[in-house]
Image (cartoon, rainbow, N blue to C red; front, side, top):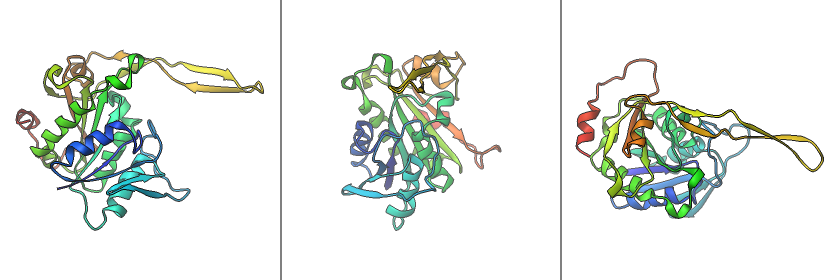
Length: 255
């Protein structure tokens, strides 16, 4: 099995390294990820200047572009002679819950793969950035869950133009309270924009709304995370019904 991994935190981020290492025991893993952090860049594609690839080690490439660029370069260039069976975006440093999926470069990786007919998963570790130290991260919890899910063939059940968005609480495995099929919720942010001045007295701005919690919608991804459960959200990229019915509840019981 061949797996392509990318992210939006950059090719040197701990999450992508831990995920790749965990999956190498069950698959032929390739990494094509941004050379620098590209968080919250959505589904940007680079069309106005060249993209460059740097081979950092065997089957690990840094890319000058954005996450969707990386997924496309991985599928159409790096692995063009050995097409991936699965594309994974992550492990993201932080949540991709509710409407945040539309900003997420990690989810864009999976979306781009789905556009090209390849099963795809986005996975994130839900970190509290207001009270966070890198030493407190539990990426391995997410990596091991994804490995189990892939071994069980969860991605093979995806209808065309669908992806799975997985969010994992930032907890050790023994503190996880199970996993749950969820729908997209809604995350509430302040609309704060910080206005400052540079040394020449010119105005500039920082967009940085403060997270104020999720809406308490039943069966939503935010509710699952609050209950210390892994959230698994199938996302339909179409406006019509999927081409096949999937009993996700039964499939998740096997993981």
